[in-house]
Image (tube, rainbow, N blue to C red; front, side, top):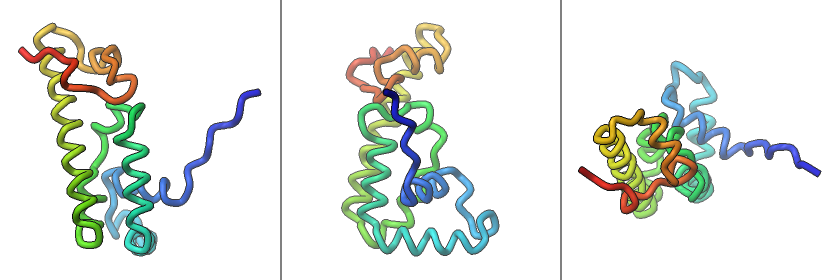
Length: 134
């Protein structure tokens, strides 16, 4: 028996809006303030969700490239500075790994999206150590 896909919870829906690139009062109206209230009321839950959705093994490399994580991390910097710093450092390592894949793809004259998809990380988390830099 196949189970239906799990629906995102409120935290995950809020997170998708915040990192989606259009998290502004003009774009969201009163919902912007409500999301900020929820973020600040439960920073650990939102940071946990961010790690689970975007940094855990199996996270999609192409999806990570479309995110605006700075909008999210900036909102929680004052309430959870150490955790935000740790997550930001992990993001830098992820982006550095992605750039290593891009360098490899360019050197091999391979399409970047194909390289990401073919790389073990493209099916999840990429690993800079497994990519040859030229």
